[in-house]
Structure formats: C-alpha cells, structure tokens
Amino acid sequence: MKSKNRVAFLLLFLISCLLCINVSSHNVSAASWGAKKVYTTPKNTRGTWYYNDDDQVKKLKITAHTVNGVKLYQRLTEKNAKKWLTKLAKADEKEDFKLAKKVAKSRLEADDFKFHGRYGFSAEGWLTAGNDNEKYYSPLTKKKAGKKVTALRVGEGATNEFAFYCYRNKKLTE
Image 1: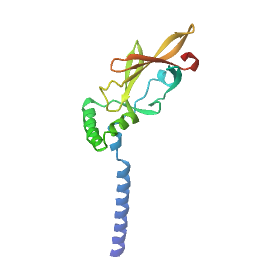
Image 2: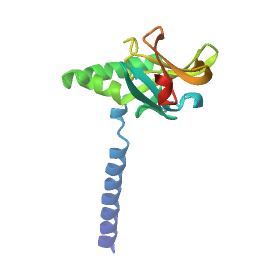
Image 3: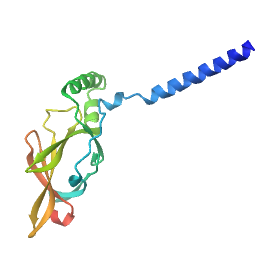
Image 4: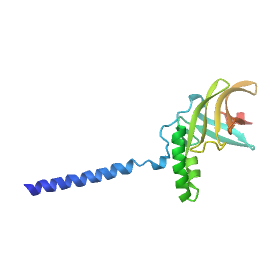
C-alpha cells in the first residue's frame, strides 16, 4: 500500500513540475520591454489612407491597434520608461547596439492629442522618447477639387511639423 502511495505521489510531483515549467515558460515577458496596455486609435483615423511621396502614391494603414502593421501600446509612466530604458541599454550593449532599433520598430508608444479641435493620436518608437521621431495623425476636412473631403494630416518631430496629407482615395493624392 505504501509503495502505491509513493508511486502516486512521485507521479503527481512529476506532473506538477512539468506543469510549472510549462506555465513559467509562457509567462516570460522580457521581450515586451514594458509594453503592457494596447492603445486604441480614434475611429476617425482608422482605415487605408494614401499619400504622395516624391511622385509615388504610398499607403498608410491604421487599424484599431496598429499603424502599418506595427502594434501600438500606451505610453509608460516616466518612472517605468526609465526603468525599461536602462534594461534595454544594458541588453543592447550585449547585442552590439542592434536591439534598440529592433524594439523601436516592433512596437510604438501612442497617445491621444487634439489638433484644431479634433482628436487624433501620436506615435513613436518604443522607449525612444526625445528622439524627434514622433508622428502625429490628425483627421480634418480639406477642400479638394472643389469638394470637402476627409483627410489625415501627418505631422512629424517634437513640434508636430506638417509632413503630408493622406486621403482615402488614391486619386485625391494627385
């Protein structure tokens, strides 16, 4: 009877160990670099937009949680951002300084903002605050070919300087 209890206990122990190993391997979040809460874009900025760049029509796609396929996350508090930036700097040194670029391109931090009375959002590379790489996306109404159309103003840098307008129709980019 005692040997059956020992075998059952040993079997239960081994199963528990395997479950713990499996669960702990799925909870590793070191690659998230602090990105926890997904950002939701304003509805009036979502969709496929087109813009002219050096006489080429290019596409900008904004979904509820992405810009051109890159996931958007809410900004970290200043304290958390410093903590994660320090961790990233230490890890990046080991990766021959390629890791920061990879992290910045794989996720963006986003925030709401208001431009001429309408809500839009801004986004920049994750943990890259202060690098003047921020983009601002603001919906507005613009006159094009004598008609009022919805446009998306894109601004850049720390001061939201005008970069270009996007339209829902390729023909309006001309």
